[in-house]
Image: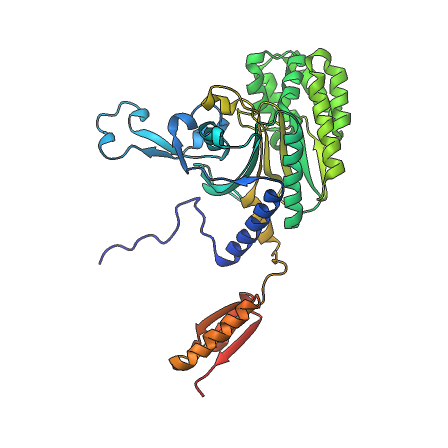
Amino acid sequence: MASTLSKKPVNGMKEILPREMEIRDYVTNIIKETYRSFGFTPIETPCMENIANLQSNQGGENEKLIFKVLKRGEKLHVAEAQTEADIVDYGMRYDLTLPLSRFYANNANDLPSPFKALQIGNVWRADRPQRGRYRQFTQCDIDILGEPSNLAEIELILATTTTLGRIGFKNFEIRINERRILKAMASYAGFKDEDTEEVFIILDKMDKIGLDGVTEELKQNYDAEAVDKYVALFQELQGVSSVKEGTSFLAERLGDFLDPAVVQSLQEIETAVNDAKEAEFKLVFDPTLVRGMGYYTGTIFEIAIPEFGGSCGGGGRYDHMVGRFAGHDVPACGFSIGFERIILLLMEHDFQIPNRPTKVAYLVEKNYPAEKLVSVMKQASEERKKGKTVLVVRRMKNAKFQKEQLTKDGYEEIEEFFNR
């Protein structure tokens, strides 16, 4: 007898049972409906990209997590290969932003400007699986390309928070910062320009190791005087959550290191979002927010939901990425909802879909004659026209257990049909 095949999914690749799938479909529909109401247009990009695109130093740590695809057929010469490039030509996309940038550069002549894109699709990262983190997972992005002003950031934050509110989330935070503020703070402290990205990588560990841990790690690599001057800024900003208060302090302290237009833009975003928001959330200035992707050039933001204890989405402005494909820069800004983590929270809180159709089950006896079955099917059709979900199945020998399972699955009405 042949050996038994493994019934378990590949590690990090998740199976989705009906209960979760129902919630995923519900959330997806809200996302699409809300984003479309803001003028975003659905698109789709391929799951694979050229490996050179994926390894173009724009994806930060994610470039170390690419699932690489071997060349095929006559192109694959494993025995003669000297380097990885000899056997690999494609890779599975690790996010939706880089594929969108290539898509826009390739199709710009057929797209409106500015272009408001909506993408929902799977991405792949060879990461270590853990709670809310998988090797294959769904991302949900909205992006605005061709809009240089902070109207893009305002629209993205309002659309995303409105969507979260309609799903049922309250009292969450949108943490916001600016890459140019991060650079101004580092320059003011005395760090060299070539060191700032490494400094930001250490700063990004703040939520894990705290300010003391960040200070200690920075001093292992950089001048102690610069580190002390840098850390002092964060100490003075502790307890400050208002964008206006935080950026006004930095404008005064950093002087010529910080462009006044950056401060004005962030303050305008805060005013507009707070005046127009529909959902219950707080916009919070966070000078420690870095966002690890190498392509961010301006405003950055992140969703913080207390129940999860970490980021549930984020995004920012990436004005140079399209230019890597098109040969000229195109202003671009995007926001990604942490779809999998949101679903996880809803599942853990036993979320019940509101206003879903009444579910009815018809249990038909095994020897029920075909001529009578027609009338059952017609009755089911009439009920479906009224908006009900109707399941027609054979009645099991253990009908009691069958009914219990149907009730557990949300069937409120169960009708039995016997040949009598």
